Image (tube, rainbow over all chains, first blue to last red; front, side, top):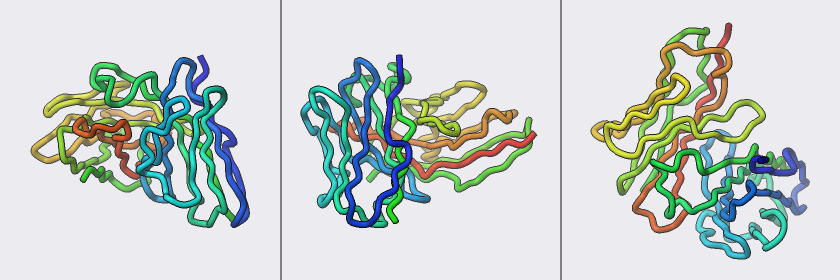
Length: 122
Length: 115
């Protein structure tokens, strides 16, 4: 069973270009989370999606950022007109259930992270 | 609000040395606490967890005790190995939140163990 797959692992974009980051959740997982790690900072929540639905995007910048998780295919995090401050590692995680649904104390390791996508804006 | 503060790195230790990585938290509710580990070139993996005060999480020789009185969840290992070299993230999940986006992470501490 393959883990959470993210690609590209490394992406370089010039200011003003678009960046697209892809995340394929683990087989059987219908919940996807995107986190961003800025240099010298911890991971910060961006958005939570289920198939064809954005459940919570409270951590997503209001401008230029969007996310989708279509019925078929991977989840996409899209950043338009990138700026230097967008340079970061973007991590995707997936789970079969939501944080609210599962008992994290008893369910064990049910949240799986991908290896991350490093975006560099030059 | 919810936040996690963990010891800044990097930390460099000799093999078989004792490890402590400090983590303190601020939470509005009754959080669960976690340590995640990220080995070079890999994603984050759950290392251990504790869901209530005085619980001790343990795995692979690592331990952490949920201390409500000091709002801490320090990670310890009695004798580190070279294979423990990784980045360690402390995190909390606040059960009171109704959304699913309730994992809050610290900044991570890079550990390097030298032979």
